[in-house]
Length: 275
Image 1 (cartoon, rainbow, N blue to C red):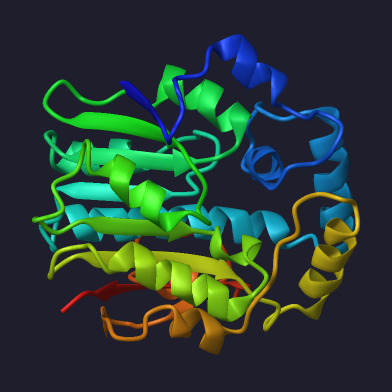
Image 2: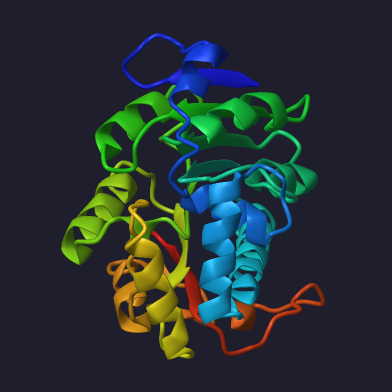
């Protein structure tokens, strides 16, 4: 795969590893732990277990979010005819990553992954390998700098053609809601008409215990995550045409036989089309 950096020379693996802080829990590594992965440290497992003690349903939330991601990409690559994807805040590779789902349907699909976590960078270089027909690139870049993300993604993606923008479980890392909406608009603005946004994030509507667990996690010194209401999540789609059934609990978005989580869950998502 291609490895691309944002505004700086490519980092060597030793340099990247030096940026990894194993003393503070990290959401991408905890998410990996909840999904059964092995790319995490003791501090992540401890934080994940503490969260689960307060809110045992968080593993179902993680699985529902991942299953929604797979179904939304399947829709985009299939029914919607999208051939390019920009996955911002991709997290650690697990099963059914964006390029794997898309390129099973469209072997020549192009995917750009974006994340600023050094552990993600190490694993992305090794594991996020494109099909022979398509192309997969990784940007070591920050969601908070959408102009840089777009500029670097343009080295792989054709912005004159529709793109599927993926924001899966990432906007909660931006505590200011209006700032988060602004960044979403900035990422969508240069995309061609007919592009799509797939977005899902956590709430505390169904289980108040999730808010307590999240507050406890945020107090650990890790990068905080803000749970939002379904109405706020729907607000990210302002100006887009929502694909049925709209913004709903993730298991209820076009469910298939792979859905194995409760229908009512604190992970809401949707897909919207740019006019």
